[in-house]
Image 1 (tube, one colour):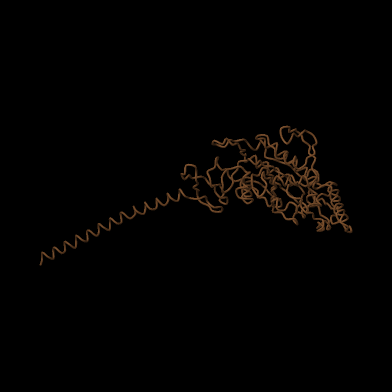
Image 2 (cartoon, helix red, strand yellow):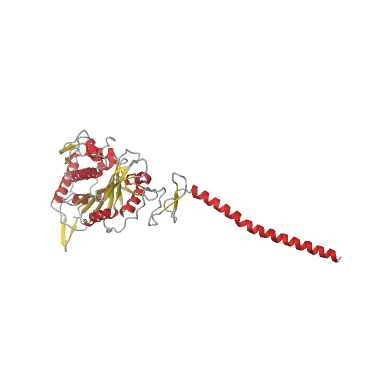
Length: 423
């Protein structure tokens, strides 16, 4: 019996030892299995990680590249801009800051596409417009479409494709990142829209300073009468990388068109023009808002109320994109760009008196309004735009108080014509 009890104790002890070793072995093997599983999952996530959606943020972004290997790229300095989805060809600069812009300054952007609707195409004409309604002044800053900038959520690329990548909101975000301003309104015209506008104005007279014999059927120097087709070619032609000369010509045409619209009562056609271009020109303006800006437009037509600026060779340099494409773009000098923008804004902040030409333009518009009613057999009503604004001098600031009757008209429905069709 004693020997049997001893044998039973030995068997129980041996069994307990085996259980202990088995448990220890399980504990040693379990972390190893979990570690391998997690590592494998991380590898799958890294290689298949999609682009970060707009509005989300990560400490760093893993993006795809031609080799298929995950690569860490640096995020922009501010977290409110989405990170890039593709590896940039050049380091991403920090967002533009330090620009002093008064809250009363209006910021609009005028865009010209190289493609007819419904396609987006590239934006080859980009003009930032700063307006100070209080002092009736404006500054137009032209920006090269081939400027190599950061498109938030995309990568470093030409500014001209920002609209095609994500529409007007992506373009606004791109302008905010690279120029420190967010336009509240935009106008996007296509080639046919611009050509149609010039023809609707019965052509324009343009002083050509340097002849262009190699394009547009040959354009001589001097005063040239241009129809829509010739004006479009004059505005869009570029000789190699000479974007600066093209921006000069675009600014010149904008001056001529703005002058023709604001003189001789031509703004009487604004409702008809708006109806004609609706569905073609893309904009977030509506007709009542545009009509409300007519008095401001007449004051801006006064001499020297609009300043013209551009990002020229002192602010940009030609750079060849690495790779086999040998594509050339413009790299901006951020300090130089900031200086141009600040100068354009500062010039709006100094008041200057209006000339008598404003009263002349208002009288012309009033006469055109009366003629419209007379032409359609209606009695001529009391003019709604009275050319008798008052100006008072307070210190160094000139304050203009419009007449209470300086309101805008709504033309008779019979004055609306059917658009002639898209050219």
